[in-house]
Amino acid sequence: MPVYDFIITGGGSAGCVLAARLSEDPDARVLLLEAGGSDKGLLFQIPAGFAKMTKGVASWGWSTVPQQHMKGRVLWYTQAKVMGGGSSINAQIYTRGNADDYEAWERDCGCHGWNFRTLLPYFRKAEGNQRFVNEFHGADGPLGVSMPIAALPVADAFIKAAQQYGIPYNPDFNGAKQEGTGFYQLTQKDGRRSSAASAYLGPAAGRKNLEIRMGVQVARIVMENSRAAGVEIVTEKGREIIRAEREVIVTSGAIGSPKLLLHSGIGPADELKAVGVTPVHDLPGVGKNLQDHLDLFTIAECSGPHSYDSYAKPHLAAWAGLQYLLFKRGPAASSLFETGAFWFSDKTAPLPDTQLHFGLGSGIEAGVAKMPNGGVTLNAAYMRPKSRGSVRLRSANPADAPLIDPNYWQEPEDLKRGIMGVRIAREILRQPALRPFLAGERLPGPKVNTDQELYEHLCENAKTQHHPVGTCKMGTDEMAVVSPDLKVRGLDGLRICDSSIMPRINSSNTNAATIMIGERAADIIRGNRLSGG
Image (cartoon, rainbow, N blue to C red; front, side, top):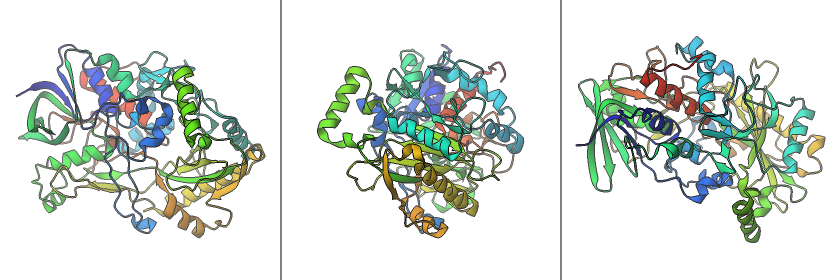
């Protein structure tokens, strides 16, 4: 029976970081397990390839349960199934959120040592920033962070339009302040996606003490008394038990991590019994506290070929591919969402609570009718949702999809603030700077104006921003799953180290924060402490 010091249960963003950092110790035997395959294909490397990913490539193929507050709508719920996890299929937007997000983890949620001052060195440690080197940014880390190289003139026009609306220019959303409009920083290096797999595992893959296995699903954590002794995996050859002498580290993501714990008998005892799983450790918070950002998009038709929609034609798509291969430029080098803003839904919001992503196309969203000159998309999302959902088991069979319930708009405030964000987006698209580029709004369309009409439209068109967190939350209350050192409460040899530990969602894209969690977790496990940490 193979034995390792550390077994890491998923090759997502945090899992790749942990595998690389823990294997820096040559005496530590590290095994990284990933259910998906390699990220080496060209589609994963080309920045624009993400547009294919959210429609099902390299994902588990899961959906939500019918959403009670969205007229029973079932939403496609992309969760990565590939080495690198979300960092291999996302839009590469590098944002951390607001400093107060992390202050609140410590202040309000009992997560000592997780304030922004402590965490900033870990953000900097991860970052190899192309442009910024200062108190907020690092230049020597493994993760490539750069400015867009393929933005179109309409992207600059969006920034001007946002300023005309009243949002000031901000050159760095990850700097001294979050609010403003400008260009996003992207996880790209030399015109290629910089995922956690390429940035962290690439340099570490040759180490003799690091084993990486793909196409392996972890069925359960093997418990001996109150200690995690290893894992049971499922491969094409059948089932196998692998032992961990020091720790099992769960990094299967905000949906996969609670699913794995529940299949291992760790979770709410009554729920486990109801689906035929024998409880091993009654922990009521497992699978609870699911939080996500809901994407509410507005689409405008272009007055000419001002977006990347025209490159959907076969001959132009071929030219785009050639441009990329020869020069690392053109549509394929674009993340498609390269400008945006953080702003306040209204004057009562104490912190920026609305994020805008300006998309250089309309076909980015599934089901959007084609327009003669193509279009642009402006996404708005309320960043501080109060609604809380859950992840539960469908059955005792680990092969069955989980029951994912984000419970969108459970709290009416989330819907109210979301509609406010849509109204901001619509007003920006009407500003003078964009008039030469746009023929007019097409979705929701000029006939949709009241809150009720917008609600009806959003029930049909809203989608996840692919930011689920919180389902194995860190804290000190009775619903906390892990303590601030990321150990599962009441058990030994078991930690959770991914986005599922966030007690509250950060107010931006979540990948940068997840990579930070991996960096912080590695130092906690090794007993290290960064300056300021």
